[in-house]
Amino acid sequence: MDELRFELLALSEDQGASEILIFSTDDQLIVSTSYGQSIVNYFEDSQRNIITSFFPQITKLDQGYFTDIYIETDTASGFKVVIYYSLATVFGTYLFIVKLLAWILGGGLILVVLIGFSRTEQMLRPISEVTKTAKQINGDNLNLRIGDQGAQFELCELIDTINQMMDRIQASYDKQKRFVSDVSHELRTPIAVISGYGSMLNRWGKKDPEVLDESIEAIINEAKNMNDLVEKLLFLARHDNDNITYEIASVNVSELCAEVIKETTLVHTDFKVNLDIQKNVIAQIDEMRIKQLFRILIDNAIKYSSDRKEIDLALTKDSSEFIFKVTDYGVGISKENLPNIFDRFFRTDSSRTKTTGGYGLGLAIAKIIVLGHKGKIHVKSKIKEGTEISVRIPLNN
Image (cartoon, rainbow, N blue to C red; front, side, top):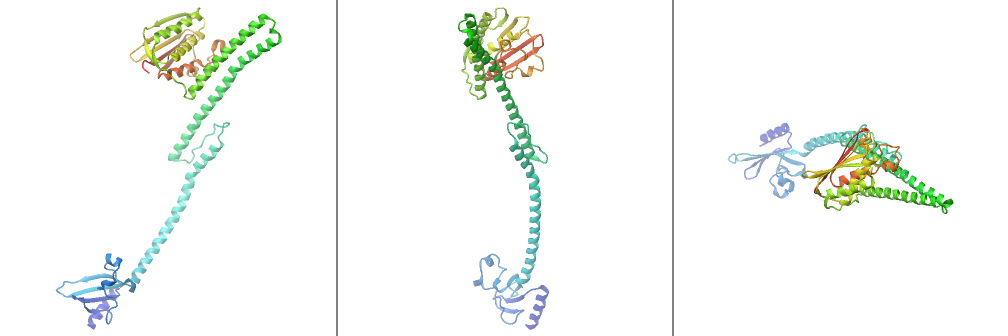
C-alpha cells in the first residue's frame, strides 16, 4: 500500500492534484495520497447543496477542494478513483483572468466614453447652431437661415426642412406686409376724398347747391367704392381662414351667363359682345359665386380693352365640365407679368387708377372661386393683341 501511495503522490505532483483516492466498489477507501482517513468524503450526500446538486464534480468547497476528475472503472475491476484539486490554484487562475478582463473592460469603457464624448460633441454642435439661430429669428430678420456645416444624415435633412419652412414663412410674411400696405394705400384715397368734400361742405357748400350736389355724389361714389373694397377684402380674409362656404345646387349655367351678359350690355352700350352660348348647360355650383366669377372676368376684359371695344364670350360643355371663355382685344399682358396676375393688388399697369384698373383683387377672387369648385383657370395673352381667360369647372360638384 505504501508503494502504491508513493506512486499516487508522484502522480498527484505531476498532475498538480491535491489528493487522489481509490475506493472499492462498496465505497470503502483502499488507499489515498494522505495517511489515514481522507478529510474529503466524496460520497457524503448530506453535505450536498444547490451548487453541487447541479455540478456533482464540486464538493466540500468549505474545505478548499473540488473534484476535477472522477473515474469509475468497470465494476468487475472493483475500483473507483477520485482526484481532487485545490481551489486555491484554480481561483488564482480565475482571479488573474478576472483582473485581466477588468483591465480590458475598464480600458475599453474609458476609450468608449472618450470617443463617445468627442462624437457627441461633434454631433450636437449643429443642434446648438440650430438653437442659436432660432433664438435670433424674429419679424425683423426672417432672412436668417441655419447653416448645415458639419451636419450629417437625418440632422442635415432636419436643417434643410427648417430652412424651407422659414422660406415659406418669410414669403407669407412678406405677402402679408404687402397686403396690409396695399389695403392702406387703397383706403387712403377714398377716405381723403370723403374728408375733402366734407371739409368743403362745412366751409361753403351748405348754401351752394352746385357744390352740395357735387360733394354728395362724390361721397356716395367713394363710399360705394370703399364698400366694394371691404367686401372683397372680407372675401379674401374668409378664404385665408377657411371660412368660405359654397351653397351647391343644380343651376342652369346658360341662363346665369345670359343674365350677366344682359347686365353688361346695359352698362357698356358701346361694346360689341360676340356670343357663343350653349343652351341648357346644367351644373352643380354655387350660383352666387359663379355669377360673381362671370362678372369679374367680363369686367376685367372690358377694362383692359383699348381702341377695339369688342369681347368674345363662349360657354360650352363636354362630358364632365363646362367651359367659360372670355376674350378681349386690348392691351394684353407681358410674359413677365403673366405669372403674377392672380396676386392680390397686382395691376399690369401701375399707372392706372382704381376707376379704370380696379383694385387688383378681381382675378385673385376669381381664382379662389374656381378652385373652390375644383376647377381650373387658364390665361393666354399677347401684348397689344389681347387676352383670353378660360375656366373649366366640373358639372358635378
